[in-house]
Length: 223
Image 1 (cartoon, rainbow, N blue to C red):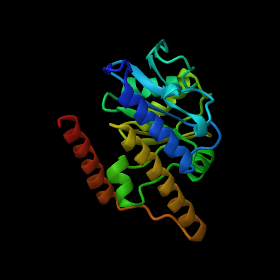
Image 2 (spheres, rainbow, N blue to C red):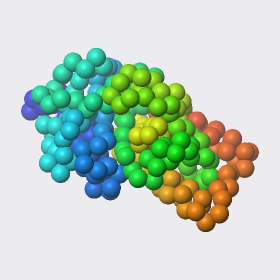
Image 3 (cartoon, rainbow, N blue to C red):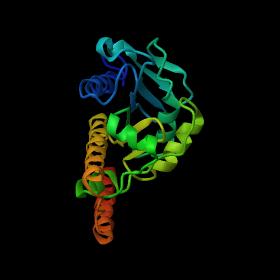
């Protein structure tokens, strides 16, 4: 939205910047890896610029482009993973923000090709069940977007094969919380495997909690 001071999509860009700073501060990314975006209107997104250090990132490094990559606001180059974000927005009208991280435990599972099975209740209620691993595709391509969309389904997260994590939400803070929860769950999974075995939740509990997840999102859509 155009603000009286001439700044366009200021709220969305600020939310993306705040999230980018948070994923770096919390150790969910290293270097310049990872990216964050927010939907702007029907077919535009505010997204972090490519290869920009989080320590020095400013609002000028959050650019707005349309779904074909045409610049709307800002002169910086958008993230090389913008096509993945666009693919998610096209497939999921309910998604208002995408957060992509490279957190260590969850990325380790993506390298192992190991999905996060339903093992703790909050994981199912908030993320929609089993977190799948996408088929491998080269970063920055339309193919990786398609593969991630397949793995995501109706859920709030997916593991990107040999790459990292994607979390989605209606808002940027929600997408960030999902990425935090994926990493937390991955650590629990890893500890459980190291000391014994992972006991999945009973199937009837998973079905009930998936239904809670769906009802929650349906209510939010009609709020």
